[in-house]
Each structure stands twice: as C-alpha cells, then as structure tokens.
Amino acid sequence: MKIALAQINPTVGDFTGNLDKIVSMARRASEQGARLAVFPELAICGYPPADFLEKPSFLARSKQAVAELADATRGLPTAVLVGVALPAPPDAGKPAVNAAVLLDAGHIVLEQHKRLLPFYDVFDEQRYFLPSTAQKVVELDNLRIAVSICEDAWNDKNFWPRRLYALDPLEELMKQNPAIHLNLSASPFWHSKRTLRRQMLASISNRDGVPVVMCNQVGGNDSLIFDGSSLCINAHGDLVAQAKSFEEDLVVFDPFCSPAVPQPVDDDTEAAYRALVLGMRDYVRKCGFSKVALGLSGGIDSALVAAIAADALGKENVLTIGMPSPYSSQGSIDDSRALAANLGIRFEQIAISDLFGDYTRALEPLFKGTEPGLAEENLQARIRGNLLMAVSNKFGSLVLTTGNKSEMAVGYCTLYGDMVGALAVIGDLVKTRVYAICRWLNRDREVIPHAIIDKPPSAELRPGQKDTDSLPPYETLDPIVEAYVERYETPESIAEKNGFPLELVQQVVRLVERSEYKRQQAAPVLKVTSKSFGMGRRFPIAVKVQV
Image 1 (cartoon, rainbow, N blue to C red):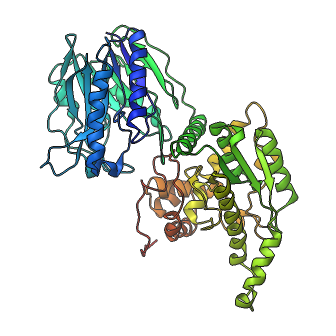
Image 2 (cartoon, rainbow, N blue to C red; image 1 turned 120 degrees about the vertical axis):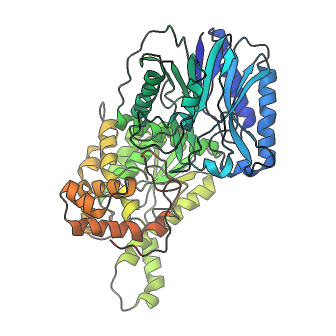
C-alpha cells in the first residue's frame, strides 16, 4: 500500500484554509497513487487551540469541518487520516476529545481519541481533553492499522529511562496484531529534537516489528515552532521516507517495500536559524501583518534579528532604525549601515541626543542632587522604544525585540525600552549561540559585518560601557543560564560540573530569580530549546528563594 505523508502548516481556527490545504494535499496524494494520506494532529482546527476548546461554537465548527472534508474527498480513491478536536460527551467533565478520524470514500471508518495527554512544559492538554480509555486497530483494504496520536507514542519503557505515564497505549494496540503503526503528531521543535524523535520511533519499530509512520505538523503558532520532519521507519528500524524540515511537504512511499534512505545530517545551528525564520514568518502573517520594524544598534543581536526578518518576510518588508544617543560610537552607526546594505533592507536614522536632553532637563528638578546612573541609561532605551512604537502605529509594522536569552535570564534588559515589541525573536538563544548562528550565516559571504562579530558587546548607554562591566563573560554566563533555566540544576551542581566559583553561580541565579517580573511582561519568545521563557516555564513573581 502506498502511503502519503501530508505535512501541512495549519492555522489555529482557520477551518476553511486548513480544509483547503487538506483537500489539495489529498488530491495530490491521489495523483501520485497513494491509497492513504496521513495528516498531522489537530490539522483541521490547528494546534494548539488552547481555550478555543472551551467554546462550543469552535468545537461545533470543527465537527462540521469533518463532514465537509468527507464530502470533498468522497470521490477520491485515497483515504484520509487526519487530526481534529471534537466535542466530548456532555457529562465528561472536559469539553473536547483529541481525535484522529479515518475517512474513506466519504465515510468515517475510525474515530480514535488520544490517550496520553501531556501536561508539562508548553502542553496543557489535560485542561481540555477527555482521554481515551481504549485503543482499537482499524482495517483498510485488509491492512490492519494501529493509530496513535503524538504523546501516545512517547512512553516506550525500552527507550525512556523514566516514563511519564503508567500505561503505554501502543502495548494495547500491538496485542491486536496490526501490520503498521501510524502516528499523527504536533511535536514542537527544539534543539536536537529531530534526532531524538527518529531514535525513539526506530526503537518502537524494532520492538513491535512493524513499520512506524509519523506525520508531524510544520509551521509556527505563537511561540511554538513545528519542524515537520515527518518520516517512516520500516519494521527493521530503517528510515524509508523523510519529509523536509521547516516547510510543507508531500512524500509518497510504500512502508513495506520502499528502500532505505540516508539518515539526515542534523545541523542544529542551521536548524535553529531556519526554525526562527519560519516562526517569525508565521507569527507575522498569521497575525495579519506583513511588515516589521526593529532598532538596529550595531550590535550582534539586532543584526541577527534583521537577517532573520529579511529571510522570513522579504527585504522590502523590513524597516530598521538606528537611534544613536550621546554614547553611541560612530563604528556602531557605520556597522548598522553596512549590515542593512548587505541584507538589502531599509535603514533610517533618528538621533535621540536632543530627546534625551529634553527628558533629562524635564527630570532635573526631581533628580537634583543625584548622580547619573541606571535611570539615565534606561531612559535612552525607553526613548527608542517609544519611537519604534510610533513607527509601528503609523505604518502598521510589528516591532521585533532583539534581546537574547542570556539578557532575559539575568534582567539585562529594559522594560518599556529594548523589551518593547510584539515578538522576541531570539529570546531563546543564549549569547554564544547568537554568535554561532551569525558565523554560520557568514559561511559563504559576509552577511553580518565582521566588525559586529568581533567587537566586545556593549549596550552603549554610558561612556566606555561593556557588558562585562555588569555580567560575567558570556562563555561563563551561558552554561550557568542553560543549566539553571533549562535543566533546573542546582547552583552547587553547576559550579562543580563547570569548575565555576559557587559564589559566582549563586550571583547569577539571584539575578535570574529577581528578573521574573520582567520576563512575564516580555513579548512572546520563539521557542528553540527544551525550556524557553514564556508559557513553558511558569514561576511566581513574588517569592523568596534561598540560593
């Protein structure tokens, strides 16, 4: 049997647009001789729908969409397996079920509900969905098919050293002697996730002795980025089909006869960049915008954000603005112009020295007798934020923030200043990864001017300022941030593993804990690591933490 991996980029709530994609892909699969087209989890309504699932009208529209899909594919020789949210029974205590429906010749052959509902990191599925209590195998042309939905396949006791659930739905399915296992997924991307996913599915195919087919969603929805990378692994654990990463794709194959294909070589630096390009593009366009604006400081962070924006939206849709203050170096202004020229994007300059003088004179009666310090530094950032928001209002451009994860972690950022904007594009990249991606961008030609990469990082808010005046070097800071924020390691463990002074680690941890109030007012962060700031990391603001 020929099967198609129909990897699409749905939009939450866009039932008409999503159905158009599904029907179009099903027809293409049919033209290529596929008997079955497999689509991602919740492809009809988009993932994650969040509190839309508590609206009866949303679920009613979702159910209606299944009927519309059945009508649209009635004459196709290709069956469609697709994910959808459906209303739960009235007395279930939950509003919805996360379902996979198999449609053949306009008839519903199977409605399988998801059993394992993740409730960790970015996942909130136990809030909305009623879990299935049983799994059943379905037959199509006498082929016995086991169907699972995303998390249902992530609890293999032979693969995971510590399982999250007491039961494994696949064990129940395998007792029914299926010939193949199909998994519908909306599995978000993070660093090294694609390799882990392939290894896990290969372990399942080896354990069960049947081919495993996974169709994963692609695209960005708010902070989450889905890489696609759908695949099939045969009964011997060999990769026999592989869809593209970070773009829609249709791959037709025979899971029983297709020869093995080479294992992809995963470059996590390239993947992070492509993920951020996709995440930005979808965030901007799915929110109904087409243009963006950002401040260009001459530093490496804003340079990377500008490069991502140009790739994501086209150079004609990116406006960058240099806003030099009395402390900005001529080199930074020149570097910004050079970057804009390299990218082919528009660059404008608004000097803020006069505005800064007006503000300081207005505050002079209140600040009299005090020394210039942090308030005056942050004032420059807030003037810039106001100017960017004025441009946004005037021209309908979304403002992009340019802060990285290292800065957000320790609060080295200004509320209502450089944190102003609609999307924190690189807020999940520590500074050293920012440098690594910029060097990767320059692999064939100079995209990021070498002067930007080579100069010591500085906010340029006072004479001779360097980031290291306030922070440890990023080569030291970043391992601490990654260990404490992403893996929840203790200061003692971090110090011992890395050979850092415990007092230094504790100082960084105190900064992380003190800065939660800033992060909870920050723009959404595009997630590219296993633990980003935002919806997947939830801590109270008012706390007293012993470090």
